[in-house]
Length: 245
Image (cartoon, rainbow, N blue to C red):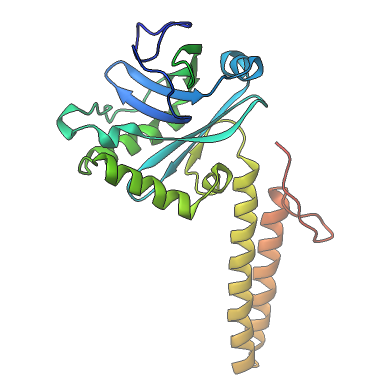
């Protein structure tokens, strides 16, 4: 990977590659490879200098590095390629705290020609790298998947989350502001939990005329409202919205 240069083949002799993306970790570090057919200048510029953001989603058999660059490359998912590498050949990061974070190398490849169109090195913050390394180490404990099993694992996650934005709802870590998709999911979870609490309190009220139950219900509702307003999800009039980044 260190010999990769813009304008040179990503894989010697390979053209007509499928459009996809993948994340890998090896002895020489972290690499995000993105294959786009005939990428335009906006996409190449986005990779080179666009605002970047990343998120980590962990599935039952495989994890994903989600990414976006500027406005030209929206949220997309790159599965971890390490799961298809034999166990004794996988690189595993150390368990110590990644002081200062680490560098992720990003490679944009023209899927039509197989040529590298853009390169970039991105600094990942320590807290995100810690979660990323933990995911790699956990993955190393699982048996290697063959190509068929790997495709089955990908298909299973795609059925559960057919789009990258749905995947974002399951993110366990992210760089930069929390994605709006994750915030919307949090609102839904809070609403679901609130409905459960209300249902439980209503059941208590039906079975008992205890004043303490009514007092407790009022306290719970006030606490939930205060939490939502404190995080910018709810206005004083009770209406909801997703906070802007």
